[in-house]
Image 1 (cartoon, each protein chain N blue to C red):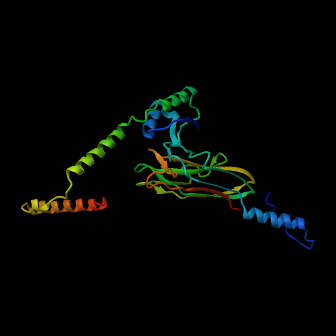
Image 2 (image 1 turned 180 degrees about the vertical axis):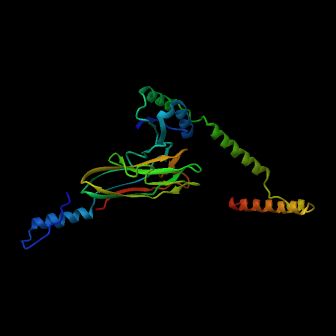
Image 3 (image 1 turned 45 degrees about the vertical axis):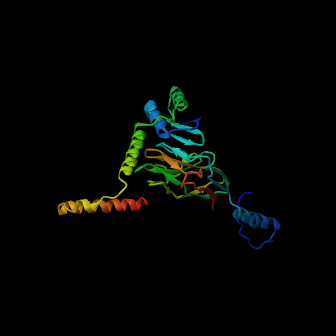
Length: 167
Length: 123
């Protein structure tokens, strides 16, 4: 079901067809927007040494939505760890193009067991149709780790990757 | 970027990263590990021979072999544990009571720092 630009009524008969198209169908779309989510509960944590952006998990930390056109909101707040003074970067791949470019949309220098990194992004103005959003990361040096609910002591957390059409 | 995926368990990421970088040079961009898979990230223009070489390096990787830095870290840790076992008590400043004032002050400072560290370590 596709979004229909709501009609501007003038002096005309109110038909069930118009009501169904412009009110019922659009309200159903608003109630149940295109959405994808995945909660990490993996057999092992994720690690990378890549100094260029790569997919964290092209299967699970990836969402394909068929949207009605507009904006998509992405939220993910994983616990990540890396060696001293090293930086871990995150970006989103939207249909094959990175959203942030350069060093991505967020970066952190984790200390101790790790830090939670809030990855929040509004992908604006997408055309109606199918869109694939994937989480990517890289490190400045060393080995970055993203905890994935894999039973690691004091880091057995289960972050949720959420992708949702919002307009 | 080219990414090749090789199934394998028990990866010493730091050691494998070091040997891939040493043997593949600038074609090598890094590796990712998750759930029994190693993904090696290579530059787009990496020749097929180098791709095969990367696969062989991953397949032949011995996760029990430590890098020089990993060995040094273990040695450092062992030295620390040994020093802890040899110094279970904080400094006894009474032994410095007959020393000059500056030495006594230093002894008290060392004792205080030891106590702070023990507190941080919940001892």
